[in-house]
Structure formats: C-alpha cells, structure tokens
Length: 142
Image (tube, rainbow, N blue to C red; front, side, top):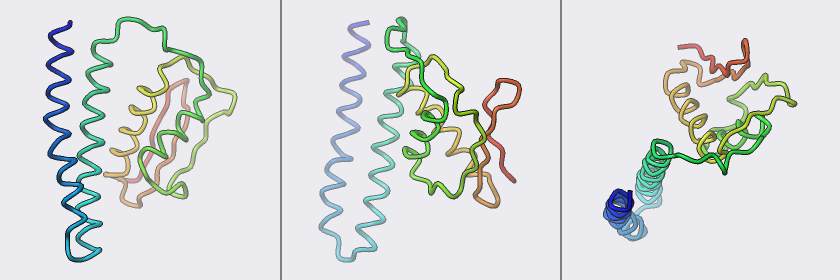
C-alpha cells in the first residue's frame, strides 16, 4: 500500500509539472485567443489528472468514514458547477428531499462524468436529470 501510494504521488508529480509549465508558458503567447485556447487545454489536462487520482481513491477505498448523507440535488448542483456547463442546459427533476449516503467529492465527480458524456452525445446540448424507480437517469436527445 505504501509503495502504491508513493508510486501514485510520483506519477501525479510527473504529470502536473509539465501542465504547470505549459500553463505559465501560455501567458507568453501573442494573442488572447491563443492564450484562452491553451489555458483551456491545460485546465482540462489538470482536471483529468485530478480525476485519475479520484479513480485511484475509489478503487482503493476501504473505509467509509467520509460517507455522509447529502441531498441529491446538492450533489447534482456541485457536479454541474464542476462540469462548467451553463445551468440553462439542464432540467433537473429530483425530489429536493431525496438524500443519499455517499462520499460527496467522489459521487459529485461521478455525476460530473455522466454529465460530460451526456453533453457529448446530446444533439441539442440539453440534459434532463430525473429519478426513475429510485435510479438516477440522464436523458438526452442523441
């Protein structure tokens, strides 16, 4: 377990260093359009590295001390914020009283990934999030 943790830390460091250098170098580009484009690219790379760390955390999770009860609508709102998608692209039909017992950070990331996938394939770029038979569903045209 200690070797795995050390290995993961080293990999994360090796991935984050070029991203940080690229982010700094981006500020030296000539036009704002170029700076914005590269900032977006390096921001996306950084969020992917953080998601990989979360995936590792999920696969190695063996204690549920950080699981707490949260309102599902709050988790969905957090995921929408993480996805950086305009709120008008969503219809959320979840009972506000619905609560679940989860690790907030991990579950919010999982919902964000569902939003990313739904947005990728939605022909009209709109997502409806509903509860059907006690299951969380992401509906799109596409």
